[in-house]
Structures are given as C-alpha cells and as structure tokens.
Amino acid sequence: MLIIIEYKGEKVKAVVLSTDDDYAAEIIVDDFRTLFHVDQCRHCGLWCSEDDELYGDGYCTHCAVMCGGCQNYFCHTDMIKDKDAELGLICKECHLKEAKKLWGELTDIPINDDEEIDEDWREFLKGTPREDIWHWFEKKYNISVAKDLMGV
Image (cartoon, rainbow, N blue to C red; front, side, top):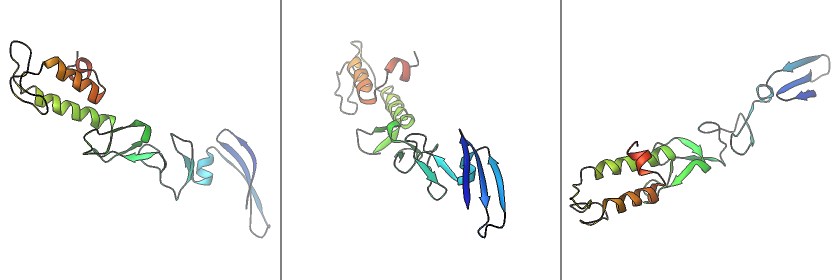
C-alpha cells in the first residue's frame, strides 16, 4: 500500500507499506509521474495512465487528431478543415504545403500584359486578373501571398 505524506509541485514523499504490514519504507520521488505512471495531456490537462496512450506531442484521445496529409497527430485546435474535403482535417504545415503546391502550378500559367491569366487554371477562366487569384489564395488558405508564398 502507498500512503502519500507530502506533495509539493512534482515531488512526492510517500510511505510504502507491505501487504502484511511487516515493513514500511519512506520514498521521495522527484517526478510523481514516474511513481504513478501517468502523464498529462498538453492541451486539456487530463491525466492519463500508462494504459492510455498520448498521441503526437502529448495529446490525449480527446484532443489528438490525425492529419489527413502527413498522418501525424496534432491537437484538434491546431487543425484546419480541408475545404476541398479530400483530406478532412489537416495540420498547418500540410495546409501551407497544399497552398505552395498550387502556387507552383500557377507559376506555369502565362500572364498577359494586362496582368491576367492567359489560359484557364482550375476554376479561373482565361482573363482573370492575377490579383483576384492572389486574393483567392489568401482567403482559401488564410495566408499572405507575399509573405508565405513569395517570401517577400
């Protein structure tokens, strides 16, 4: 049997009694998680036993969500819904990678002297102003074209 005598921060002072009470030992543990084999979810603070798995960088089953792009686990608050619904929820890195991939496609589309695309690209028809497409990128991906895609 374990009896906790003192608890300060993460330090635990406890007495361990044998099952037949023939001996007792006082122990001091620097990290109570070692003593109780528990860890805490980084987002909600839920304590999880060693039987409960923490996902990704330490998220419980309530907070962890797998990214549809990279298949890694992240906190649900850090996820973005893929508006095309191909990947479901994706992490911020995969979201930006998708924007950069499309941006790369757009660089292959010719632009005329009036700053309009010279051929159809995705849902944009020939003659669409380049800035309209830039605004679409910023709205769809919640990014800055200049900062995130052009590196300006």
